[in-house]
Image (tube, rainbow, N blue to C red; front, side, top):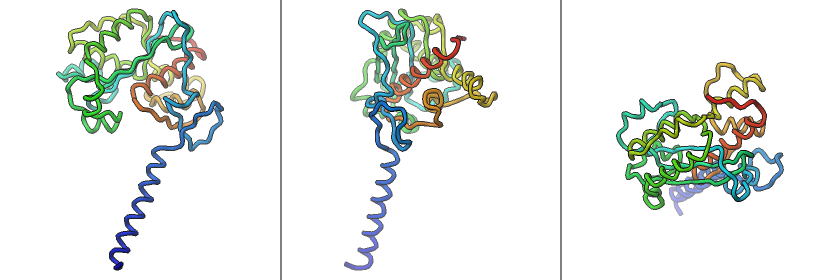
Length: 262
């Protein structure tokens, strides 16, 4: 073995070690216990960690609240409104998740859908939510059918909840109009934005910056439910992840403070 071969082997070995460390940081151990005091290097899993599970409503319970999240085929800043989105003439939705809660804030039913719109997903959007054009092509559903199911569920509820809710409503209104479906039910309900209400709660209870106007869902969940800066949450579908965390935040805000809507 020459010195060149030895050098190449050392470079390869170093690369494997570095790659392994990166993977370890990207995929920390998942905490599956029920104690709230767990190691800070562990992550919670939407699918596997009991601490993230929500109470299930008994059979026959009537839905009262609908918690929703959207993910799109292109990366869009969540400050965009319905008027700005109207300039886009193709469907936006890549995935859509929602939870129906009864009056006791228990889960009546949950829905997770990939929407097969035929619009390619950009690499920037994939970096954000991990969905690819190929994966959605193999697992997606007809968008109109999914949106019709959402509209039927909206008819039975009194309030729509979401993080950066105005953005999600604008995306939904855009696609409902694209598929020639009515979006009136989006505006005929009470609205509760966990970001807006969460910031108000942090200002009043934790002396947070009164000029703060934005907070990520992960940060809000970590502060409200754990008193930590930012827990790591592992998930398989980002829209499902956001709906679960938004629901936990809504329940905390609902029970700890006076419920207000805009």
